[in-house]
Length: 219
Image (cartoon, rainbow, N blue to C red; front, side):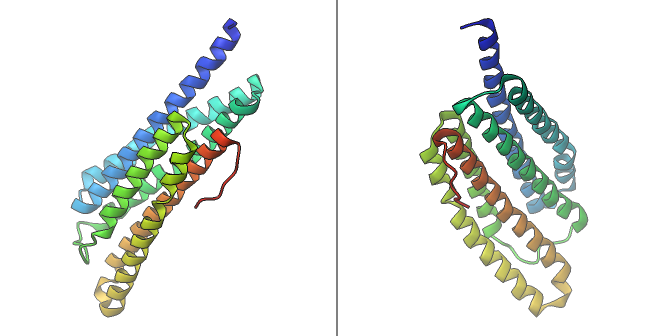
């Protein structure tokens, strides 16, 4: 292999390593944001907001690397699909980071309010999402399109929990006007988590495209 080709393949490997790092950073942000919500911990919430810059910087680094490889190397076939998939995955991961920040901002604005109700479905949604991220990363690293497909099936459970939380909160709002503001903020958190599940599904679709050269809509 020529020095030129060796450098090119090293750059691809570094790009894949950056994706792994970004997934781990996003997973950490999500976990910390929901911990902050559970405990109404302002310090944890501020940490998530502050550290979002790490996610943004890494996402931008991945985007720039992808654009440089597309422009300078003019990759073909599977390398082209890999770079395009990574570009799209980076965008979805950055959005998950943003939504984790939005959850943390709910905590900041809550001013230590007590939850209107203990909502066991929200922690379960987070648990499923984090499992999905773990399996999506495994599917990416191992080029396993079947695992990517299987991972998206968990989104049905997220949607089910989303509906339960939404209906519970709307009932609370209709029965007690004093709880409207607090319940509304939890409705926002619920929606953010549902959207995060959708972004993980998008990531899995990108992995399937990367491996099988097929576009499948699984969300």
